Length: 267
Image (cartoon, rainbow, N blue to C red):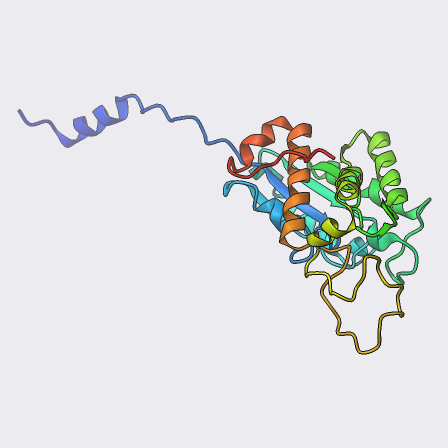
């Protein structure tokens, strides 16, 4: 028997719709904000992003030479604010903020006052991130790797302390990278710590850094320094940051590649 087309159409409409499966879980997003020790080619930021799965969005907006003041003054923070407007597309957006190196005195256009301007700037990054629906994660500045005798000169300790105080006052998540990196570098000693640099230490560089302006005349400029990072240093310190992220936010472990170690090296 043949059925009229209208009856067939009605039978399809009456049939129960197939139940849709659960909506796919949203991925997390990480945005990196900081200076050259976090930036592409000179810091650990790209190595950190490489530790996450392809589903996880990790955006490295750190730039060399920026301080807590100049990053905002140049409009770079506006880029972060624009990204945060799309926060509903992600399970959560974590904004890692690390400054201090260029906030130190003697850097025109970048230096900030340690007592007043620097903590106020860091506090404002927290306020803006929360207001835009993100999760602020304050990161104390990565240590420099210069020794005086057998002891590391941690000249960024005051800026690390100021960042810790803001985190406590605002109840914000904190990664104390300064303390973790300083402990690891101190254990290494100068020679091993120098292998974390972007380039091998020149033979005539010596165990101690020469004072500015005292380098031998005609010495070619080397990419070696005790602030920025090569692949080995980036791998070490990105592992520390990844480990701390998992400690602070255990669910983030599923966003990291299983093959990438992300434990914090013990000092």
